[in-house]
Length: 544
Image (cartoon, rainbow, N blue to C red; front, side, top):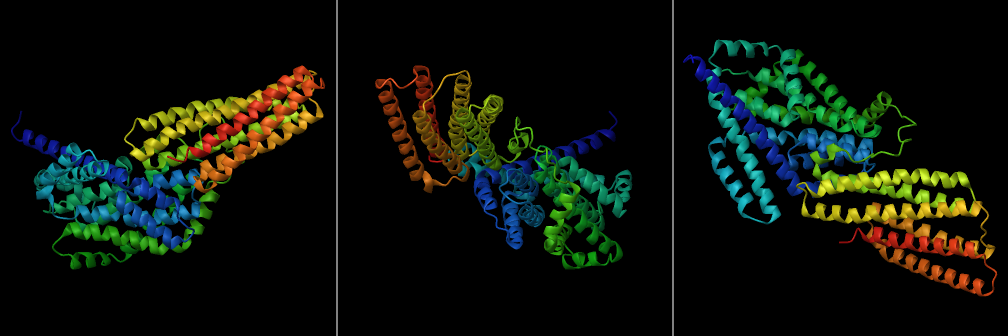
């Protein structure tokens, strides 16, 4: 092979390998941070108030901790989709995430490349030797941190050589056009789905010196990457409801409007950029990192007062659809995107289970109504909805089993295990509703229940449904303070069921009960009593 070509190929391999290590290191570091702090960050996000300033601060803090604005926005799409957060609340948090993600650029700008191998070794030892999860996750973070800088170091040497090549200079000179640089940054970030990684690579390019790229070029590449990062939230929203899609759109509008305004200002007054070069003359890396931070802080301050207007505009572009949830035979809150952000998976699973529970209790009410009114249409509706309940049971069970097989925290794995029991209890409630609807068919065919029997069943039905509804509320809100209340309700159901049986026995002795109706009466008492038993299981599933 030509002696001049082989070194060129080697340098291309080095740059490619270094880029791969850089992206891999950033992924490892982000995953480790999410595993270490994801539960706490999820809890913080779930408690966001309507105060937009607090939303920005929390978004900034959470993103700075987990080192990924994409992760934060995907998490927020999940929360909005699940109804845990309003659109206006989530938009302000997204604005804060744009500031928090700039911490990555500040880290990359540090001159610690020579220490990367030592950091990798320490991280690997902590991850391999120690058994405690927190220590292992800390080691995983250090490992990613070290690999990230090692990748930068690997790219640096060949890039310096490329910077002296006329052909390479010719390609980079095209990016001196701010519009080309902007679209190059946008497209590259859309491909790798991380503005933090894109900015880190830009900092690496400017850091190798010898005129690889100019500061002005790096500025417009960075602005393009700020819009390109919206692609991750857009992809996450594809499987979300319309409110989740509106958040992704509002986030994109925030980035596009802010970047357009500041971009226009910089094109009209390019001397503004000289301030960064004059303030940090000896560190091109710091110049880019500081521009990235100040740029995002500026667009957030500029648009924080227009959160409600962004929400309004996104609703105008994506209007309401009355038929959006007409077909309930599908999962609304669980999709493959939740595995990208493990800390949202349990919240989404709980939301899907709560939805299944609401469908089931509504079906139970319909079944009871069908029996007391001898309504065939309502009984048939119960059988139809039962198919949806069975579908949700199978699908949710599959998702929970998948969750237990992934790298979730011990706490989330334990919660997923308890949810497997809960989904079975809810499915059994559906079966009891179906049984009651079948009793309706028998009554329509001529079997009679005495007025006394109907009165006793009505009392028991009301109390059983009340117990189930309270159980689902406890499960959905994880409110442990109501456990004593549901225990008392279940005792009342048991007492009423016992009284029903005693009344039925007395009526048999007095020979005033239809034996066929007596069978239906007894079976329905058992079904209603067991509904309360399953309700207790559902409520107590929030306890360890």
